[in-house]
Image: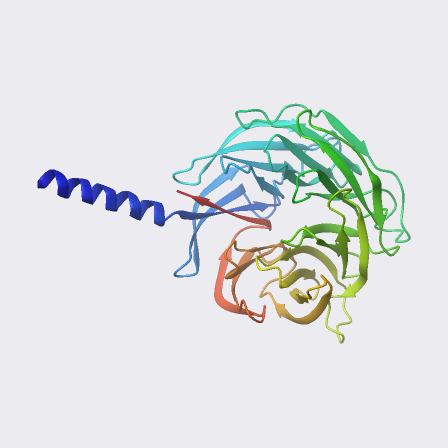
Length: 375
């Protein structure tokens, strides 16, 4: 009888552990105002609060982060590396605690890396070099460490904005849902370049339709796909607008449906640049961050994929760069580069509107927010 009871208790304990998986958050920062590097938090969903569990030293501005599809590794760009080429680093993730351990670094082959993404098989990393106007392609080894770059695409061109578009500025590389293509936004040339991926060899080549252009002076920045894979959306940083596209899954080709959709209030007349973009898990609402207005634009997504602005939410901080919609669609976390805080909002899943929870977490110069589940 005691053995049976013990077995039942052990089984119940294991079930409870499986059901109470920790929700771990990773914050990338600029090396400003005392920032130590990458910050690790645990999110308490019931309380709606964040608790810091680690700060990982990296003095080279680990601004943008990506998590390996297995959840075992994390990658950061080293945007503030020494003059010349920037870098990218790999970290192992302790599955029990979510804590990070540095593994290795590689060159990004060009200056100012600002974005890193990982293909869905976890074999290839793509690093966008804003300063150098190039895309670096790096293999990921079986142990999660980064190999030396196996491919590089150097972009060329200019745009009408003399201050910001004096040359190519590659700002992000976003994987297609089917993992066959990567979409590379170039702020300097007003283009989204489209590449086919050779995952086995960590190489890329231009797709049959190699790019799509947006309105001159728009400044492509970040890009996201609708959950159904049929539509996609692009931040136009310099005009504070968003573009919507339909996508041909066979060829990867994008067709522009809407360009320069406004994301600012009609009566706003100050300086602003848009930054980040995310769609909620249901595919019904799109959000875009605005630095200057200091808020999130909220847009409804129609059945045809087209966007209609339905509101905006001030974000309780200055310069909301990156933000996160949690995987369940219940909360939104906004990182403010210039007020050193992350604010937490509850999300109405029917209307898409946000409500500030009153929670503001101090983090020096936060510019990227990710969440992973740890069991």
